Amino acid sequence: MTAGPGLAAGAWDLVGEVQRFGLFSAAAVVDRYAEIVDRAISRHGPAASAPLDDAGSGRMVDTAVAMAGAWSRLVDATSTLLRSEGAHDEATPTLVLPATEPGSGTGASFWIHNTTSSAAPGIGLTVSGLVASDGHRIGADALSVVPDRVGLLAAGTSQEVRVRVVVPAAQPAGCYFGLVMTSAAPAEPMVLRLAVRAPRESGP
Amino acid sequence: MTVPGFADELERYGVMSRRAVHSYLPAEGMSEYLRAPAAEYLGRSGKGLRPALCLATCEAFGGEADDALPSAAALELLHTAFLVHDDVEDDSELRRGEATLHQQYGRGLAVNAGDGLAVLALGALRDNEGPLGRRLAARIWSEFDFMARLTVDGQARELGWQRDGRIDLTPDDYLDLIMRKTCWYTTLLPLRVGALIGTGTGGGRSPDLDAMLRFGFFLGAAFQIRDDILNLTGSTALYGKEALGDLREGKRTLMVIHLLAAASARDRASVAGYLALEPAQRTGDIAARILAMMHDHGSVAFADEFARGIARSAALTFEEAFAGVPDSPARRFVRDLVPFMVDRDR
Image (cartoon, rainbow over all chains, first blue to last red; front, side, top):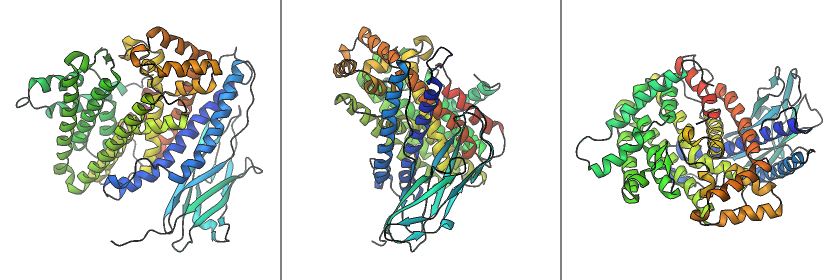
């Protein structure tokens, strides 16, 4: 989109919104494939053992819901822009980590976007521990966020942030939740969600 | 925009990989009914991006390009085999500015030549065992195996969507499709295989394959969306394929998906009706009307900005995927490949 000076008010916002939608959508696909490629290749097992149609399984549903919402808003916004208007709101920020087993690590990315016209000074990031509805917890020391501080984010640029969890070996299976906080938006934490699967049985 | 020296490096890798590819086309013992069509696309001036990406990544990660040559050749042979079959499946008319193989040799010989190219790729992969050792060669085989399964699965999905008249698709469906159909073999496999061979033979530390996955997909997706846009708006002379070819084939590109979502009920019905036509009924005039609707509804502009967001991420994630890799001409080549692939006009 070449957003020239003659475009309607809101055009530049929409350009940024579409770019972010592209980036988020692509990042969601990458996260799904990170799960299956490890199973298919890294263990040197036969690739046939990794179904090709289950990229991300449970997470795909959550991602699809979030993306469908954003997509619908963008289509509306595009139509609105073509009528020289424009307004839309943000998707619910939830980061769904790839499901994993006790004793294994998992992680996912999210992005911080500086949509303003000026550079953003240092942004700090903090991640909480995770808790399940039955009271089981994964301590904050099992989680990391990289980088935990973004020095200077130039106007219109983005920074990828990786959240990683190493699930303790004795952790009970369940659905765990936590929060990622940023100093840039202290009242808008992002929800972290992680499904811990029961360990697979070994042996013949 | 081309960085100074980039074209020379691309040509250098191109010469190496073309020589390797042709070494797998036997001069004797192969019927001319197979050899001539099999050699046809290989002789046309493709960009050679995939083998170049593989060889450069291998060098950047501390290996010798020679060690990755069989893999680079296998990649190009498989890519060419896919193109031959893809052109038959889509009944395309032009490839790299000339008649497609099935137009030139007939469907039977073209399909068989595609099979032959895939078989030659197997031989190239077998040659990995000597220089790489059995363990690394087996790993490379697994990488190719995974890629090939994804690619044919992606192609099947696209053909199935067209056959079944699917119009209920989202950008996520599209991205998932191109991850399978093109991105894995265009960027992810060359990067992963290059890095594995480079570190496996050069003694460097293991590559961060997760970071490579992000970089590879962002690069490949931006490249593919750009390719889809060029198919609508590019010059046939520069682009080398027939204008509006994807639209006439009924491909579910990001622009089509956006148009279906953004159009009024009446326009949407018109687009759905167009996609339900038999390919031969999708004339140039009707395709041009659909293109005009895409412009009216901002679908081309949407796809362009969507790709731009992904391309910006590709530039950022390159640094992550190549973190700790010392500066070298090969590393710079891969970095400079990003704008080359996503800002191209052909």
